[in-house]
Image 1 (cartoon, rainbow, N blue to C red):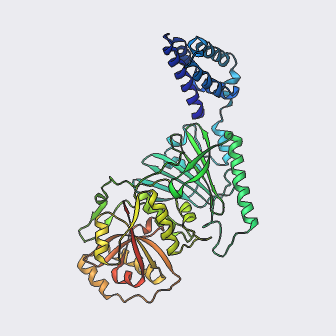
Image 2 (cartoon, one colour):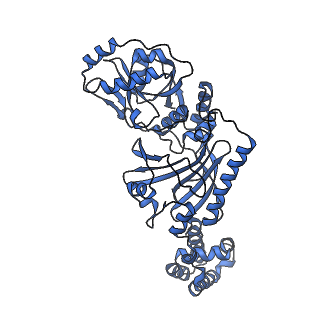
Image 3 (cartoon, helix red, strand yellow):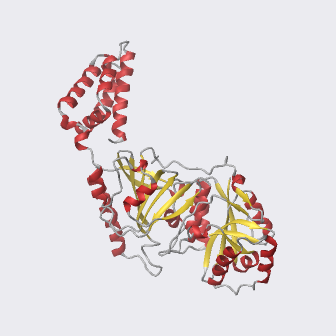
Length: 469
């Protein structure tokens, strides 16, 4: 049964009892009926007879005169009798079954116990996708890009869900995003726009055919807030988030998820220094930085911003919404100026600001010691990436002194290709070996890699930090 029906049930009996007390009478009849008439039955009766508004109006009138009589108790008893003797009004007869929902989705997404009670591994096995994993602070994100079966009758680019321990807390189905769904050389035309609208409408109609007409809601906050259609079923909210020329995403959350678009804020009370780890070899790095895998698209900038925002406690964001704000092109690619402009717009609502950071060991050390992430613009050439990955592997087990000697023997990188622009995070440093710890949005394999500081200066284009204000 829907939450709105529960609230109708509760509010009616509250009004009934309250008005009876104001009249100086014992509210026994209302409570008697409430004890025997289930919320499901009463909610179904209200919905089927369209009587919800009438009950509320009677309650308001009761403050003045009407409800001081026993009409409320009589009306309630009559409603109860109708529900009992006419079972066709019962929610049980019209409740949408798990099998019906799974049939509409075209995948075995739901179990009888409910998605929020599923173990993550059982959920993944039931779906049958090949999931990759990524840590997001205390949470984990599982995502699959091999979604071959249509979902709700439409092609999906990605299926992902987040969980903490054995509890799933959110599912996103990405049907379209301009990074994966379009190439860098693609451009919008009337046909493509029309097809995107058609897909969004088809998904919406499919959901409505199962759950009824949607309500209006909002997802996210500030400049990253969007209007969504909301359907309710059991303990789930289904939010269809559609931004033309940007994305089509179905977000599934628990029934207690707020869809009012109220703003999230950076967690200023959190001790960010507590997450800084120090190793015997001199490595200092920030642990628990959320990972977002940009995939094959050029979403390094937007994925990096998403990682920053989630690190500071902003959950209801993703790289697709950030791509819209920052003017990311089809297939990916974001200019530095557009990114900084978009970040300033987004961060102000979250009580974050762009702080000072320079490609200097002292500046990097100060930010990392405070638990603050540093965003780094660079020219990421093949030579640079190969050396970074090889050095990260080779340094394991070596003493700081021996590794420092090895690094000093390495030749300077060649001049970087101006078309190899990239952005990632600096999350660590080692003063003994003169290296910085770098985290790229390429999945767990790139969560923490090490770069010779001289190499970093060669490919550097600029740095900045994000800090709570």
